[in-house]
Length: 262
Image 1: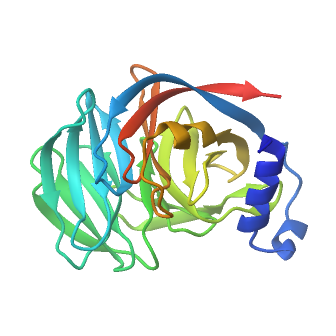
Image 2: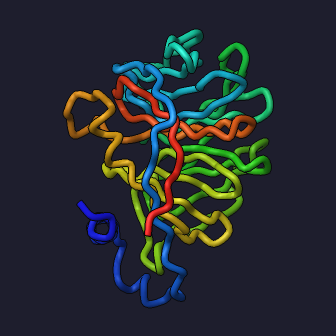
């Protein structure tokens, strides 16, 4: 499907409403990107990936579904889990992020999050928030959270209290289903749930500055065809300037390079 048609279809599915559009000033048209696969790595085909980030040679991953949710430390090269913690069966694990010597994790609909030691995965404390928890990232100063709506929430990384929000829009149209997040070079990258698109977002304004089309990776992923086995998972190695993506129950994780399109 041509990119312009794909983006138009996604916007049609994700629009919150024309009233919101009428109140927004026009934005510059987002840049379009395809991808080039740099390298392919193994990934656990049973991992229902909800959160992902890279740190010091390892991937840290949160997997979802009640009775199957875990927090994991994964060897990038082999895909082997080197450390793991299971959640209590009533919790559906969602996004995770590191902050100093801690791991912070959300859950889906139980309105509770958990803080663990980054090195030992031992529980340190719980915290509360309203609504659903979808994903987390951080910009070095604050945590950034998605909840399935068009809004990104900002959290104080020490108290985990909410400090503000911004609405994500493409030319004034709010974009919902913001899922797994990653902060890359001043922008927030967000999987759009049940699509093959990643939005590049200016966190100061909420404006979508680019759309990354990963449609070819779905065919390369080796995934079992299932409505739930969608693209979800973005990690960035800042030192090596490497960008990784995967999906729920995908047997592969891809290092990719963005290719601007006309």
